[in-house]
Structures are given as C-alpha cells and as structure tokens.
Image (cartoon, rainbow, N blue to C red; front, side, top):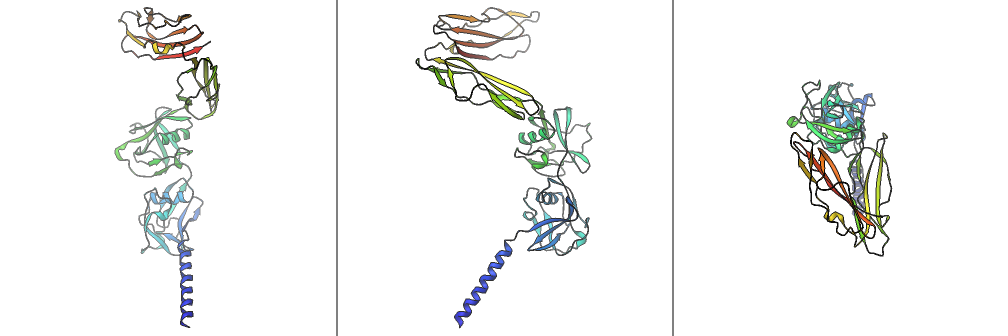
Length: 404
C-alpha cells in the first residue's frame, strides 16, 4: 500500500512540475489602453493577468522600448500620473529603467515591489515617422535635424557613419551619401541645442532614420553633431584598368576576367558590352559599362582589353612618365622635353600626338604614342604634360595595348 502511495505522490509532483513549467514558459505581453492605436496607458500581462506600470522613473527611453515593441518607430512622449486614466488590476512593474537598446520592455531593469497607486500609471505616445531636414549653406550638404515634440533638434554624431548618412540622404530624396560629416550647430539656425537622437546604428536597408536603432538623449557628448553630403547623381567609384594579356602564337582568342566597376547612387540597371570572362580576339577591344539610376541619371565607364602574342612589343614598359613644368609669370607657353619612347621594335610604324621639345600651353595635355609592329599589333602609350604658373597638378600616366 505504501508503494502505491509513493507512486501517486510522484505523479502529483510531476503534474505540478509540468504545470509550473507551463506557467514559466508563458511570455509576458504588452498593450495600450484607453487611448488609440498609437497612444495610451501601458498595460502588461503576466501569466494571463493584465495590470499596469507605475510612473516612478518613467521616461522617454522606457517609452521608446514600449513603442518599438508595439511596432512603432519611436516614442514621442512618456506620460505619467495616469494621463490616460487609471487602470485596473495589479501594478506589476515599478522603477522601470531602460537604456533604449533593449528588445522588449521586459528586458529592462524594474522592480516588482512597490507602494504605487493607479493614479501613477504610466503611458506613452508613439509615432511611425520622424521628419528630418538638412541645415547648411548648400542644399546637398549640412547638419541633419529631426522634428520631435514640435521642435527641430540635431542628431548626435557619437556613432554617425556612412551607412546612417546613406539612409538620411535617401530619406531626403537624394540618390546616395557622398560622405558622413560632423560639425557644430550654426548660430543662425532656429534649432535647439538639445540632442534628439543619439547612438544611431543602421543596417543599410532602412527607408528612414526612424527605422535605425537609436536612443533619445538630452545632450550630446563632445557637442559634435551629425551631417551629410548628399548627391543627386550616379557616382562611379572604380572602373577596371586597361588589361593586356599575352597569349601563345597559335592562340586567336582568350578568356579575360576583371573586377566589376563599383557604382553608387540608386542604380537600377546595368548593361555591359562584354560579359566578364568572355572570349576576346587578338587585338584591342573596348569594354563599356552603362549605368542608369532610378531618376534617369546615366553614366558609363570604359576600359580596353588587349590580347597580344607573347612576342609583341609592350610599349607600356617604355612609356615616359608624366611631366610637370612651371612657366615664368609673363609667359603662357613653354617647350617641354622628356625621354622619348624606346620604339626600336616598332618596325612597321610609329605615330605620336606630340614630340619631345614641342611647345605646350598652360594646362594639362595628354600625349599619345601608337606603336605598330610587323604583325600589325599595336600598343598605345599615354602620359600627360602639365604646364602651370604657380601651383601645378601632376598628370597621370596611362597606356593601352591594341591590335589590328
């Protein structure tokens, strides 16, 4: 009989343990009451029972977590003193302390012990959008300001980066951000010095700054504020350099690969004259990429692919360096000299746009040599001549191989 009693007791204990586990696994809930879909008294549900939150220490950071948990982008206001009316049931949370980065209100620190009345119930006013504007001397650059609680205020630059700047420029209607900047508030603006957004972290796929992670703080350490330089145009960051490929004498075609161009600015379409890795004939081929943005802005970049027999003349190895020459104050031209291209192997023909010793005017002039060998394979060598009066800019050296 005692054995049966022990078994019964074990079953009861197991049943109670299962029930206890079931209760512990129930996730707490949150809702707004006695307001509308975006504002109201904050109520929480623990183990199937709805209750309220005491307003002791309740601030905008706490409200921010509540609004985000409910699906809104940010909190406009934190309300106390039963602003939306007194609730019913128990007061479950007191002295709530959030940092602004928590995933839910229940991840914040809080106390379960209190002596609060429902006349102290906490509430929130949530919103789904933050208006922003650009303040500066130019319509495409300046400091970012956000509209919050009927006033404009700056954004702290403590974590401001190019990703956040990109989101801000898109929200302002530009194609992309050229640069994330930092600065102080101009004296002539009507903006408040009180920071609105701080510690902004964007992933890059957000539509507005409101969708990025951030906290709302009353001041900005270091008083450095976030700014941007936006662009309305496509911008080609990099384009492949000219390619020279040597092949055995019996090869007439060869596959060629390169790194694709890098373009920013809301690009929606790309077309290319030749596919990456496609076969190229002996000789010179121009490869062109064309880009088109959402706003219809177009741009392109080109480079040359030269497929050449292994014994063809390589003019690039002997191309002169770019030349910089200063002229006297009362002159505008000067004779410029350089070490001429070594073209002894160009046993068919040599063509050049300029010769060493020619007169050059102030400015940058491109000099081109075209050398053709006995196999009618030619190579192009390019460099620049920069003539200046005071402070000059060095030109660039370039060369391209070609074939006929």
